[in-house]
Each structure stands twice: as C-alpha cells, then as structure tokens.
Length: 297
Image (cartoon, rainbow, N blue to C red; front, side):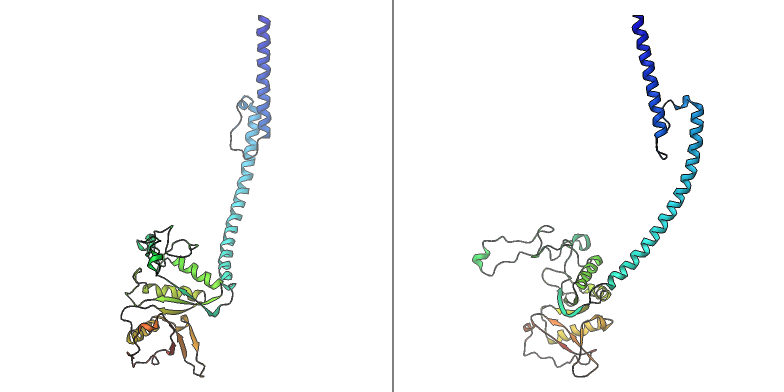
C-alpha cells in the first residue's frame, strides 16, 4: 500500500512538472502583442518575471512608436483617398459620353411614396381595364397595391420611388446622360393642376432643371391635356414656362434656319386636338424670348 502511494505521488509530481514546462514554453512562444496576461505559475520565478517585464516595456515603447507612425500613415492615406474620391467624381462627370440632342425621352415626375409624400402617388392607380367588356370581365378590378404590385409594366431598379427625392432625380439624370440621351421631355401640368391619379408637381421644375443642367441635359416641356385647355391658356402656359426658366440654356432650343440669331423653342403638346379649331387666339408668341414654338400632338 505504501509503495502504491509513493508511486502515485511520483506520477503526480512528474505531471505537475510537465504542466509547468508546457506553460513556460507557451510563455516563450507567446506573440509580442498577445492580449492575455502571464501564464499561471510564472510568478514563482521572480528573475524570469523581472526579465519579462523589462522586455515587455521595451516592446511597448517600440510598438507605441510604430502605432503612432501607422496612425499618421492612415490619416495621410485617408486624406489622399478623400482627395482622390473628389477628383474621381469630377472625372466621372467628364468621362460621360457626348450627348445626342436628337435623342428625347419622356420623364414623369408625378410619383410619390409614404416616406416623402405621406402616401403612394401613381404607383397605386386603378387597374386599367380592357376596352372590350367581355374581356375585361375576366380580369380583376380595383387598384394596384404597392410596393409589390405597382402601376407600371416594369419594376424600377430603384424600387417605388418618390419624384421629390433629390437623390432619385440625380440618379435618373446620370442614367440618361450615361445613355447619351440629350433631351428629356418633362410631363407638365400648370400650377395647381394634375391628372386624376396625381398631385401638382410644378414645384419640382426648378430642381429638375438644375440637376439636368449639371449633366448637360436639355429640357423641353410635354404639356399634358387638362380641362378647358385652349389657345389662350396655352399661350399663358408657354409664357409661364419661359419666364420660370431663368436661363434659356436649360431649355431645348434650335437655331433658326432663316439666318436669324433668335432661337426656336421646342415644346410638346399632348392631344392637341382637344383645342377647338374654331377658337383661334390672335395673340403671338413672337414677342417672347423665343422666335417661335414647334408644337406637336
């Protein structure tokens, strides 16, 4: 029995020595910037602990200098990146392709979302029914239900957006400029007017003109049909548009082929036959900044 106890104590002592040897070896192999403290039992060796503390202080001073130098380099790199990004934005605008001012697209600024407008506008317009009642009866009625079901044949990459969101206008103008589109025909109603599914959007015109000018786009106005539209109201609408465009270079104009230095403004009039041909207004647009206007239905 005594022999068994002696052997057990020897084995236990050897095991303890083995564990201490492993811990000391791990201490020597520990990375310089390790976050954990000294291994258990290292305090039992004061000389070794004192030498370790001295080396630790030496390394901490060295790494403090390295950290300071690294931080300085990082700040310099960050500053250079900010300058580079600023230059790249300007270069990106310069790298945009040349625009084709014979290439026109229609642009509608009547969309709204709850985030910007308090509700969905135009995305939830009524489902369009077929002109044949027999065919229409086979399809559901009601309205679209955004954001999954929207009043559009295609789902926009930006999702159902608000036309009042400046970042959306910026993205649209950049996309058009990247596609070499030179002119956008802006759907327009007179102040306070809109279609049956929208709300007045004339207040957006200055913002659209400014951002379009940033991307070298020209703007023409696509005058929508509205109640009681006639030649007199059209005269007032065109005069209002010209007066609102502070700088005519924002609008799409053509040089007269007659040799005159004056400009021809191009406006689009939707469903021109709404105006009665018998009602002819004797006023003229020639007294305005434009020499004439080409209207198309």
